[in-house]
Length: 176
Image 1 (cartoon, helix red, strand yellow):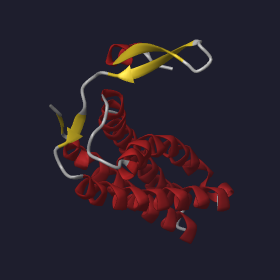
Image 2: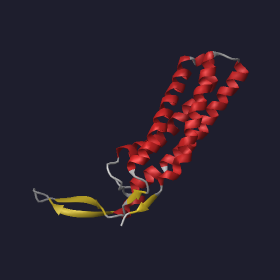
Image 3: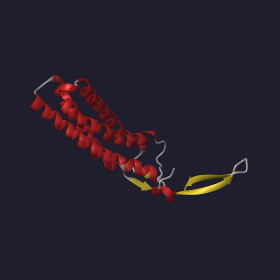
Image 4: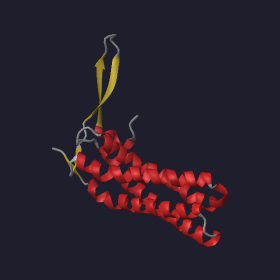
């Protein structure tokens, strides 16, 4: 199903099938776009920090589940950072599976708009999680679980900042 935003990029074609019935197919007639950098360079730029951020996020969620009563005040920022990360990770995943440096306008919008926006929300949630972890250390007292949670939240916030700062590498140009 085409959304109204991308309807002008497609043209409907009608053809007769083997049974004689008319078949309606949509063919792409819009412009194609390509990244200014090669795909291998983009994969080297985006995949390692995204995978590392995913590991730190899963560890943070595991700590929240494992030490629930002790870290229950910290669970909300961790829970909010998961959807934000996966919103950004969808763009990284699209870069990872691209076979050639050519994409439609819809694919360009999904990568170049979602990834920076998801990285920004992930950064905000990660900083909130780190702030909650520091508050937990100060208010609830020191414990190994809360110290490891704070360290994990700091690493996650640093990776989120790195993902957000690399948004300028997603520059695209129109293919002729």
